[in-house]
Length: 374
Image (cartoon, rainbow, N blue to C red):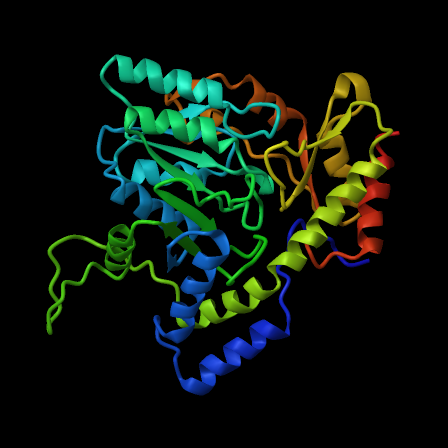
């Protein structure tokens, strides 16, 4: 049987039509009408005033941190349970990441712990420059208390919503509450442009500056003149055409992934020691990836046992993110808490969740998990 992947691309005819339109108009250059339209449509969708399409979510975060004034020696709070791209741009700028543990309700940054750290540092006269709040596996973090604490102490809030496009926080979109929001269109994300990302903001001047920096910071002149260092970060017009087609299908993709999560949850409800990632009361998760934890003391097996059994069936599964405070590259970095994130990493597993996955394929996954956990 064909291999089942965790979250493969899911493309359709709308994307092909937009790409053909791009080729027929000969707008193959890095910028063009598809890029402009993609930015407008994306901003409208997530409820932000401005959007800047770039080459990756990491590039978007790098720009956001630079425009937030982060520089050498500054401290930036960051979720520890996340992919390295949430923190690497902090180091690009010579700043110092400070890692904050998760809370159990959503697996995202613990608001009480984050505020405690901010207030203690502010009282000592060294408030963090910024905070990178990650919305994990399609589930929004609890934004309001973290945003309020940041505003009290002048900390710039940047939301990493790379995994949460289509999710909700109340009636709003995660990624639309901070100074900047970051989205990713990597090949495994809920929508893809084959690679790419988006920076969103309500500040027109900051959006204009982001575009300037993302196009090599070329000054307005008939010749090539540069008074600051920029980057080659802009998304191509062709990739934007794919993104426009993907946006049209976002609602259906979210519905499909939520269907997978509900089916997994129902199938595993009777398995001792097995829990699906909880859905927090403050919003709807997309369940970009359906994730579970396996308590070996109760289940009699480990998440790694399940992963290896699925691999034998040619089904890809993957552990949760290894907390960044445990990563060798961040050895010695300041961190607070860690027990929740460490437990989730030790016991967690991501299951195939692609919006193109059939019920029959999903049943293969369920049968594989149940072959280990009875």
